Image (cartoon, rainbow, N blue to C red; front, top):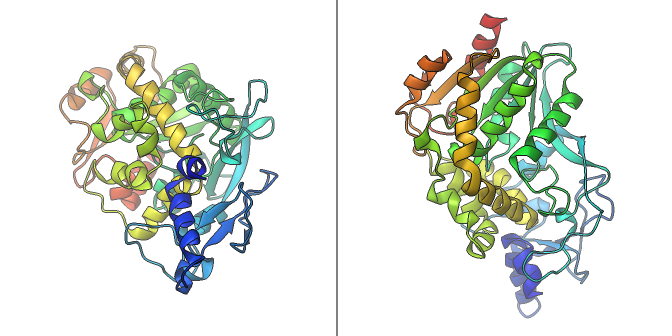
Length: 406
């Protein structure tokens, strides 16, 4: 059970302690342990709860029943009445299958002890499942919102309603994040740049048959920016004929940006990275709040923590991405810089920059924009997570950029 607790999640471990203690002493109602049974089929994400008397080793433990709130926070979080904000967000979306799963179909095992991984770390079916949230009429021009690392599509929750008036806005979780599949590295997906480019191509083919406008949010040159910006720019360089606009929010553009901040580089360390990636407060809260003025509300923090609390698969994906970026980030930034400055680059590109970014310096960004002839829009009150700091304003800004060029 000790190994299961370590490879499950901080929530599972915490809940197991509550469950164990409840056998000897009476527990208050809000600490009553519940089991979250893993479903034999991954086609449905409906959560099924049973009493804590079930000793099936495949089950997950949750802190509290739905009637008293999430029960996920172990750092003084609130227990509110009503539905979980994470469950409410999930109800707004759907699963889209895209990108064929390679490999032999062998069951994933953990990299240290060779033990069989839980269902959350296994590849499902013949294609990966991506969680997507759509807003607006499908008859309107499509706009795809791409989150950064280590974030989720949820970061665009305030942008989607603004865009939905005139566009078909779509936000999705990358593989390894949010509600999308999170296969164990080396068992169907290794979280490399080339794999993300290929998988993005497959997803966009599923989402939009016409030309699209891509909006990319990068969470620091490292994670989101140091990794996902090169993914989108490389995709755009191959499929320029499919794009109308490319809007980059705080992307890594200069040599100074080609270094992971310590908040994220810690996840690339051997063993220590595995330990810290299973801590939701380090993997989500600290990573999302240490790079700008954004102050996260508890109900929003619950959504970002959820993947790390229900399975260890999110943490292992985080380790893999961080290690790939630590190894190749400099080259990725150089390639993106070269592509955006290339005279054959034809995609209309706008760079939006939150000036209170604590991870990426503004030095050199103006010079880059002038040299590459790309429009630069500064957002004085926003940090690295521009859409978190100024969600509605960013939505209006995107509308103006696209409508003017259209």
